[in-house]
Length: 77
Image (cartoon, rainbow, N blue to C red):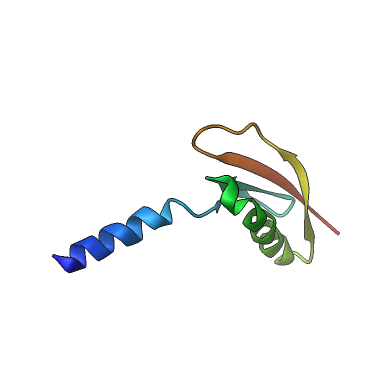
């Protein structure tokens, strides 16, 4: 029983973290579920762009909704 509770807690926390929604060499879009994780969005975008020897620059934050926000970054030199 304890095992199932632990698995449920782990799965519920996964939905709270930001993640890369779409990406290629020139841009990356990061989904941020709450404002608590906004600072992590740039770090995730930078990590993606570093694969191509570039760094992330915020292009525009999209409109926020009750379920989160999308942040668009360009990969630049």
